[in-house]
Length: 634
Image (cartoon, rainbow, N blue to C red; front, side, top):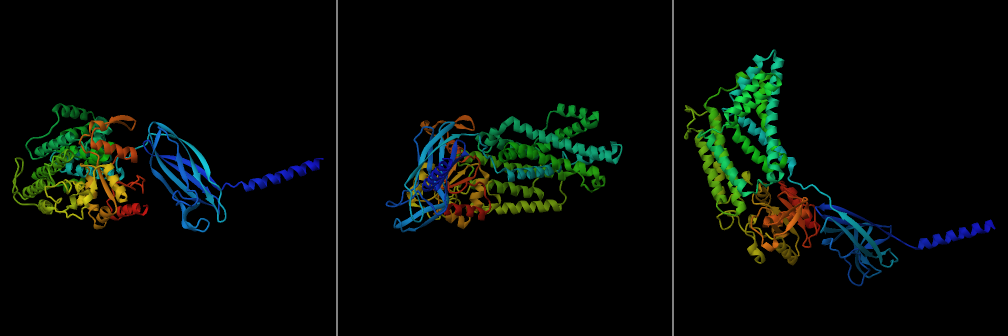
């Protein structure tokens, strides 16, 4: 009896295995979701396909097999962005079974759909309808039900390409510190301070250590200054520096005041009570005394270093974000502190220092001319943002030509200021500096008639911000009649749109991909890209013929109609979109998770991303490869 039961069970097991072998399931589905921007997700449906089987594409002609379709349930919690993209090991060839050309996948296929959440979370439901075949048979259409819960996370928004910009700020700060050393407020203090440490110390080693502590104290003081600036203004204010009209006008005035001070009209000094108190504290000796000696130097030399520090802090805040002022002050103070430590270690070097004299005041005046030139950049930013068309490219360049020509004449002794010493002869350094000033002046002159001036790209107003009817002499390269009215303010007379919806509608009509150029009127790197990279003939050809260009200015101050002024969530805070610039800035932040400019997005006319967006790319070949990679995905 037991043997009979075992045989019966064995036969049942064989039968069940036989039945199971006939229930085929050659497709295994997996789902995943990834947040790519605040509240925006990419949902990926991955099909694992058994060997010898294949899954059909979404795009199949009528009369063939059932195409793969992804169906989403309607919901107020989310909305779909564009169409579902498919990728994988695709084949497209004639299939005798259906007597037509068909596209299908083997081994693995992926289907990606972008979804934008309306609230803080969304439950995405739906099903995938698909059909699969091998070389001799097909299975009936099947459904795969899916349900995915999307919950947004606070993601970091890239503020800048900080890797290179912070190094640039440090180097600028270091250069500013070297210039400060050559001013009459600082230079004479080097031998005096070093001599004090070497004479008052018990031995040479103690003198060197005291000088090093003195240098470190200088670095700490200036880095603290940078940190305080960051804390006072905060991240939002620092990020707004480059586009705020009133801040730019304020900095213009401040820089002019700095220049006038350097010219000798007056001195910018701190209250004498501050200097007296720190000087008294420096007499205590020890580490505290050395620290207050450094603080005394900082306060006494403020009339010379203040304008340099002010220039550096503004530049650092605009281009370096929150950490910029700290990095800038670290560079500045390192250069300022370096000679005190070096000369204390090698006191014999003091004999090689040039003697103080009238040349120190010449350094101050030269810095005054540079401050005046820098001031015009802030006035230009305010003019560009308000679109006042007062400081056009020609006027800006004309003022720079005058400033640097006067600098050259000053260095040769043709112009004198109240504090200048009599020049009996022109020294070699003055002569070479004058030559550089005049050479730069001559370089600027052709810019009045449309020369690109790539050496200073990003500083003057853009090429199209000009009184010339053809954008500073740049020849048009073929306007399309359909968008002839849209190429105003477009670099190199390219055809471009300044409204996203209009540009996308035109792209759909022309069946072309789109390049969204998130830019700004006060964006220096945007101008550098337009003038140095877009001007390349091959790049121009691609932008003109292959893409629909949509240039969106995130600092455009034109107010939106009342009906379009809405409140939105940005970084967990509610803000009201009031201007056209606010609208495009929100589009960039919410859709692409980035708020830096320039920012280039390549997508098809159905809003499907072609390749990963890209920021500042000064190498022409890299930018060309970026554009061509987008075309290859069409």
